[in-house]
Length: 300
Image 1 (cartoon, helix red, strand yellow):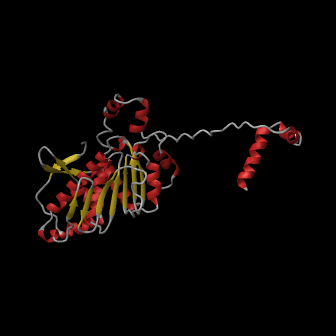
Image 2 (cartoon, one colour; image 1 turned 90 degrees about the vertical axis):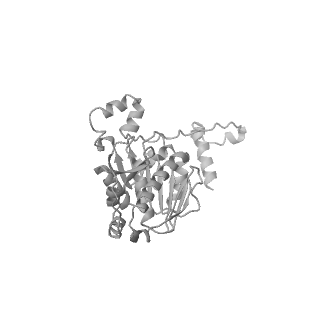
Image 3 (spheres, rainbow, N blue to C red; image 1 turned 60 degrees about the vertical axis):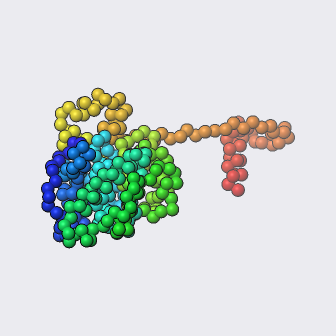
């Protein structure tokens, strides 16, 4: 994981800090973004890069955000941090995560769990009384004592219908089956949407990025202090073909190809007495004449 890390200290978060965090997800990221080392069974504090702080601020300030990204820009980890902040410092909020598969969504939820647990465990006694508790802790669903819930949803065309959603996160949207239906059906009933992906030709995500006028973020590999050093890009290019280099590294968004107009051939016979009544100029382009008649009939 190419990000600065340092060991956590034993300082307890107090009420004054808690209030400051509630007003600034950027400050929360600077001081409370932890990774969990499963081998050492310990937490390490991540020091965010400038592009990561800018990302969190932009997501927070906008109702809807569309993110085009290069590979390995840590967006899932950043969104785990933001969702954890959102759940801790709000009441009665419903948060849904939809990814290309349940396993990916579970990993994001696991990261959220680590960030929240670390924050709750490292709060002083005065703050612990007011912090929310996790009352339901499942592999795809968390419920908190403050009324917030976080749920990982399996991708399906009817996945989120019937809910009002306060925060929706689409992870790798271009790879989600039925993303167009899920997005369209939930957009009107969702207060805040973050949609992120590497581009993918002929995807609804690409079409959405090109045609909508909303907050758009490009997380390009050049924004990353480590990746922008000599050698990283060349090494990644050696592992990919040209198409994947364009999409997964250089964030090239292509227009969705239009479906060809399909036509049907109709065979029919006309009696001579009727055919003789058709004007000569109509007979010269009988197909167009019949199309006009059919259109008039449909309009009626």
